[in-house]
Image (tube, rainbow, N blue to C red):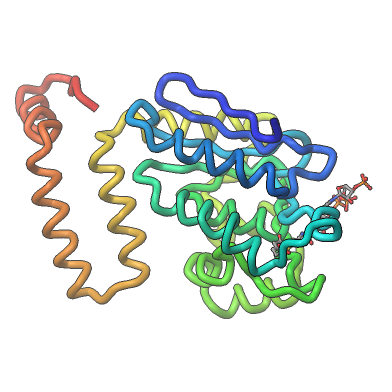
Length: 253
Ligand code: T3D
């Protein structure tokens, strides 16, 4: 097993576990991640945390494996990277990256695909693609331009400059920077907070915010209208409003 999977109290925790190769991606890791992301769709899972074992989050593609495999980069992206990135972005639950150390190449893309990024003060972000004559993939070009804007994304990705956790925070690339020993605990805490919110509202909010990156205001207003109607028809809405008016704590989630 190169992906450790732990589930408890509605929280699914995935640890990329190839520490000797900085948790770089092999076919085996992609396949185990794909299986775990299917598990994440089960009703009992309310939030997901992704982290790395050892000193790295992930160094992206395992460059040793590229030397021994018949498969081309384009095929690898089509079969493995792209479906997993889509699974995370389209998962109707919050996904939190606990970026425990260096992230490079598609390891950065993986972190960017998550809904929140909690970074260790020792974490760093290295696009890595330009250094080896490749272009940003696994969603990096799409996600980074939206998170930090075109100009910073262009400068960072073409130079392949290592961004420290502090710089990443300043750029808005990560949500929080915490002491290295606290990164996983803080990510779990955020996951638990989100898991305590009404799941349907969180899922629909994620869908709306992702959609807002792509569609016109008119289309977004219509999607908001539809999803608000659906949210208001869920029993949690009536229960939470009644609890508020009665000055009682809410029971349902
Ligand atoms: O081809 C396709 O499928 C297309 C898809 C591409 C997706 C991509 O992700 S392309 C980008 C691939 N990743 C990289 O180019 C990053 C390569 N790694 C680095 O630049 C550096 O290792 C780091 C900046 C990530 C960390 O630097 P540092 O100095 O902290 O560690 P290190 O000494 O360079 O690495 C430690 C070990 O991990 C070392 O092995 P050793 O000497 O202890 O046996 C190193 O070879 C290994 N390692 C690091 N990255 C990779 C790796 N082994 C295989 N693949 C790696 N990507």
